[in-house]
Length: 146
Image 1 (cartoon, helix red, strand yellow):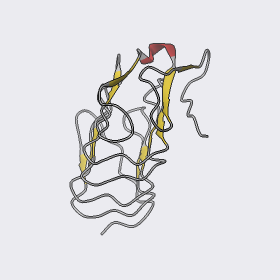
Image 2 (cartoon, helix red, strand yellow):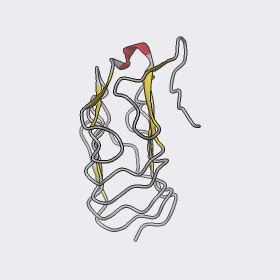
Image 3 (cartoon, rainbow, N blue to C red):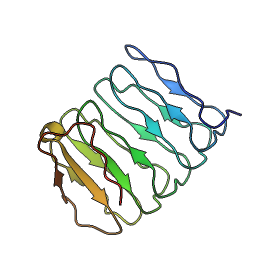
């Protein structure tokens, strides 16, 4: 068991952090090669992988995650916040050029975020239409909280 607030060490190159036991809410996968972390607000089942965030950011969950789970900005890109519960298997694919979010609940699968180069973010409330965008002119690492 890992205690709440435990921090994964900095991961260079193509390292990956794999948790093989349940981790308490609040566990933080700390900064990975100048990128940002992923904070969990609920317990995750073993097998949760915090993969390299150099060019790609992929998070695979094996359990339901509560609303409020946040995929924070990846190197001055944008953040995505969920206010509804999403099913396990939700994926936050590469955020280098595009960010594709596949949900199995509340939000339609295949919802696509436009290129993150323009500092855009998608906020999912309940069943929002795909492509809802919030632009941030000169902001970096901007997160939306409602």
